[in-house]
Image (cartoon, rainbow, N blue to C red; front, side):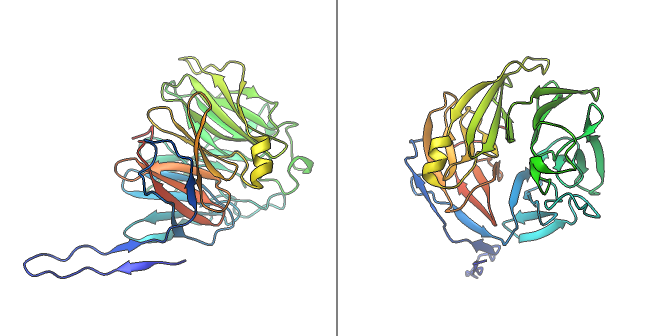
Length: 332
């Protein structure tokens, strides 16, 4: 990790400034429509040597948490302290033979000092207390069968939680003898604890977010042979209708050579920052590609952060990166 520490200057008649850390730029931006990024914005490399970085979430106390799924670790980042281990193990302990990715995955800010933590190793969805790191189980089965490896989650205004369950946490994925459900699903967890299947036809359901008004659910499918983003209409009660294709990027993925559709983040104006071919695709609510943010590596997930909610944090394979935007994240 390359860091340049800028030491405080002592000025006559003034107090010393707090130390800050300057990070090197990495990657590039391409064909970004005006109003999305500052004119000179480039991704910053915040460091790391992770097995596969995932699931960033901004904590209102002023720091970012994100996961290394195969490393079974939740990491913390702040401008004051840089990178540090926050929780280890983050998932299965001990690690079962069926998984090579035992950790938590896509984290989400929840309520009362907690976050939601889909957990590959334990094949479950948890609430995780930020103060005690205590986990409370929300769901680990559908119709009496264990989930594959819950991956990402979003919460509707009705209280319904939508989450995805691809097979990535299983060593042999669909061929694993530990796989109990015969498909890879998108689910709704109701406030009464009941679970509804939304879609069983996606081969690799992955990232999941809601539109600002809560009426549209976006789900990515991270299959190189069927790389796409889907949308589903959502009622005020959290009920979900039939899905439809939002954007197919299979050909673009073949052209770029890397970057399966994965995690997403939504700005208050409805702009979608969707990980995918080449890095992060900036999409309009009408599925127009407004530009691409590139780190030079696959980007697994994204989240808005910092005090103004305009910094886009990107977990990029073995790195943590970020870029300043002119958009404000939905949760800010």
